[in-house]
Every structure is written in structure tokens, then in C-alpha cells.
Length: 218
Image 1: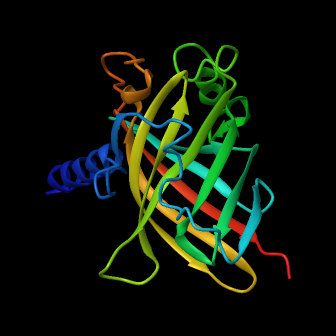
Image 2 (image 1 turned 180 degrees about the vertical axis):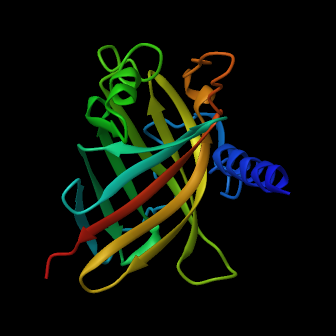
């Protein structure tokens, strides 16, 4: 009986360690970007807006983080430095746009050795590609629930530019505009191909977490 209980506990621990954090998250779709200056932010009407506000996003009021995993466990991380803005038009997310520039060298994780490894050519290659950028091209409301949107935009990472689409919750109130999103994205779509050791395989999907809080001027 004692050996049987030890076997059950060992199996439970192994399954917990192998759990994929991206398994229950919506997956971002990626495709080749076809955006140019004429089509960017095409969701914004051509008519002159009644009201336009530029709201600041930075690492003091917002957070960009991620969860990566391998067959033996997971690691939490994020970026210390980034800047951006929300171009809020008429107080409506679907008429607005967002841009974010990330200092990729500011990456951090829960392990110092991993943080240094992510900065190398095996992963982000921060010396060659010091910046990542996202610019939205369309923000479409979901009919089923207020505050729910589908965001599409161009993400440039490690020199690769792709159109990505993911779900988000966007709230506009008197004090701020908040954007919450949690989705998985395939690292290989952006040329991050390091496979690791045979007994330490890295999963392709990485969970991205956006917690943006842009204050409005009163």
C-alpha cells in the first residue's frame, strides 16, 4: 500500500509539472502583414473625430508579461521597459488604436540564468533586435458581451513582422482606459526556433499577458 501511494503521488507531481499553461488560453492567429501607411488603423472613420485623446502607456502604469514552458515546468517573465500610447477617438475603442514599443533587452524571468539566455541569439537576440513593436490596425467589438473586443495589429519581433489577432477586454471610464488580454502565441512564427535539449523540450506556445492602464487627462 505504501508503494502504491508513493506511485500515485509521484504521478500527480509529474503531471502537474508537465501541465501546459497555454493549453486553456485562446490562441492568437498570425499571418503575413499586409499593412501599409494607407491601410493602417483603417477602423478609424475618415470623418473628423469629435474628440481625440492621446493616452500614455509605460512600465509605470502598465505591465507586459509572459509564461513560457517546457515539458518539466514553466517560467514567468516579462519586460521592464516599454512605452506606447492609446489614440482614443470619440471615447470608443473600435474607433481607436494602440501602439507599444518594447525594449527587449529589459526582459526578465524568475531565473537569472534564463533571463541571460533569452537575451542571446538562441532567443530574442537583443543585440541585433533591441526593439519589438505592436501597432493595432483594427479593434472590433464582440456582439455577445460589452467590453469584449477582437484586436488585430502588426507585431514585429526579432526582425519578423506578422499580423496577429487576439481577444481583449477594453474598458473606457473617466479616469483611464484599460486593456486586459491573455492569449498564447507561437514563438516559431517569429523565428525563435531554439529547441533545447532532447530531455528538456521547450513548448512552442507562449502565454502573453497584457495589463495596460492609460490615465486620461481631466
